Length: 290
Image: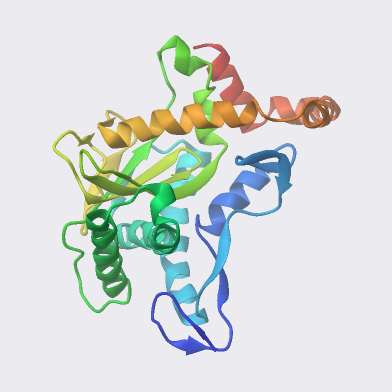
């Protein structure tokens, strides 16, 4: 018997749950000319995004309901229809919480096992554990609110100007053609959060927010409202994480072997017309024009 991470019930078999929802990686694969690659090891081709045996079938089905609604309401209209203004309700807050909870749960296990390596202190770890417990209770619908937790959604729109240093990170293709999720903390400023990139739809779930954080026109409240993919601002530790993501992708891309570069180039040459019509080519042109 195995224990579900959410409901904590013992079951014979756990579902193989995606950390970043499956509809995101499905769209990434659909709109890619070649294979998708692991950012941690660019020479490695992967068939799917990160997933773990995490949830029982009932909890997986529960999350799927909210994933489907978010995909139809936000993700696909933004990616394919260029929609910029979205009305939301508490279901969007539930979805964002469920995505960040998955990362937080797994990262807590990692923080505990490698506490000295990651440099986490007991106060920070305790905060993460307490927030995970509250989020889990909310996701199981045992309580209607999640005190002291904020969900923010930032749309990585086309950049008009950027520093020369960051131009070299190829920001459009880096953010729009990648996915990932992880939990981070700044012990000095006391900002604790999980960040998830869904091909340019970037979610920050804040467990503790310092006074230096500035997030404008990004919050998804546990209720109804409107969010627009315009006039958004993220500064502070969260803003620095976006820059860090760009720089990390640049460094990792530089490590790809000459053999793999040749494979990629040959694949593009055999599908030139498809590549010219692709989302990746659009993003490359935007990066080139910066």
